[in-house]
Image (cartoon, rainbow, N blue to C red):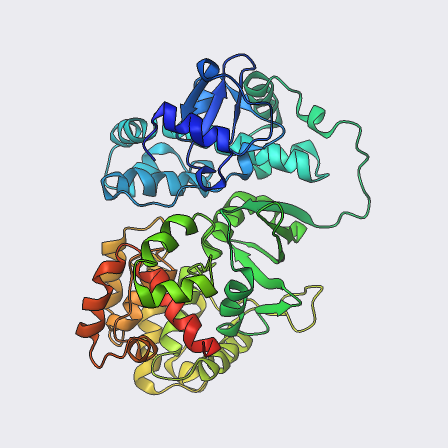
Length: 482
C-alpha cells in the first residue's frame, strides 16, 4: 500500500486488522517496530515512522516487538504488475532461495545479473535481497525460539544460517538479545515430539471450506480432514514427513504440527503452506470488490473469507487436474488414489490411512505408458500424463508461485491434451494467479446461466483482478446447493 504517514497513523490508532501486514511502524523512543494491530500503548505521531515491510524497518535500525511479533504478520499478496519481477524474486527469497544458492543463481532465473536484481529489489522494497533474506532467517529463528523447544543450533540451521556463530552474532547485533533469552525460564518439555509453526492471516478465513475443498480432491492416503484438522504427507527434496493443521480463530492463526523429519526444510515448508492455504489474501479488499456484483454479494455474505486453495506441489496439482478432465470430482479422486498407491512412496505417520506420498514427476516420467494406462486412463490421457511429467522433471515446466505466469501457461498449453480449462485451473491454484478463470467450466457456466465461455468471460470482466475468487464462490454455491 502507498505509505501516507498520516493515514497509517489513523489505521494504527484504530488497530485496524485490515492493515495488518501492509505496513509496520517504528517507534523512535523504544527502537522497536510493530504491526498496526499491536496492543501496546499508543505512541505519539512524532515518534512514528512507517515501513512497507519488516526488512525495511530493521534496515532503519529497529528490532521486532516481542508482543505483537512481526514474524506472524500476514504477507502482502502480489498485485502490482510493475513490481512483478521484484515480487517473484522476493517470493523465492522467502522460500529460502538464498539459503540454497547465491545471488547470481537467483538472478539468472530472471535473466538478470545479480547487480540488476539487487538494484530492482532495492528500488521496489527499499532493501537489498541479502537484507531481505537475513530478516527472513532471523524472524524464522525468532518464531522457533519463542514457540518451540528446539536446540538453538537446530534452529540456526533450520532458519538458513550457515553457522551457529553467525546466527548468534546477527541475532544479538540486530535484536540486542541473546537467542536463549527469548525462552526465559521455560523448561524444555520432553513430550514435545513435533515442530510447531504458526501462520498469520487476515480474517475472515473460511477454514472449513478451504480444508474440505483440498481433501475432497485429494486421496485419503495423502490428505485427510479429521474433526477440523487438516492432515497430509509431505515431500520436500530428500525430506519426508507429515503435517497436522488447525485454526485458531481468536488469534487469526493456523497452527501447524510438523514431523521432526522436516526440520531441515522449515523455510520451504512455511512458504509452501502459505501458498497452499492462500494466507496472503486480503478478504476485505477482495470480497469488497466482488460484492459490487449483486449475485456474488449474496454468496460472499453467506461465505465470507473464502480462499483460493493453492497446492503444496505444482506437479501434483497439475496431475490431479489432468486426471480430473471431463469426469466427476469423485472419479478423479479415485484415479489419483490409484496413482498414489502405485507410484507414490509409502510413509509412516501417526494417522490411520495417511500412509503414502503423492507420485513425483521423476517417477512418472520414467514409468511405462502401459503402467499409467493400467491405473484407469485412456492411452491418450496417459500420454498427456507422461508429457506433463517429462516437462516437469526436465525443468522446462515450472509450476510454483515464483515462476513466470506467462511462461508457465504457455508451457502448459504446449502439452498435448492440456487445453484452456486445465491451463487456467492450474494457473489459479499452482501459479497463484488471482485472475485465472476457467471459463469453460460447466459448473461456472450453469451457475451464471451461460451457454458459452465467451458469455461468462464477458460477465466476469467486472470481477478482475479477482476472478479466481469469484470462481471459488460459484463452485462453493454449487457444492452446497445454496
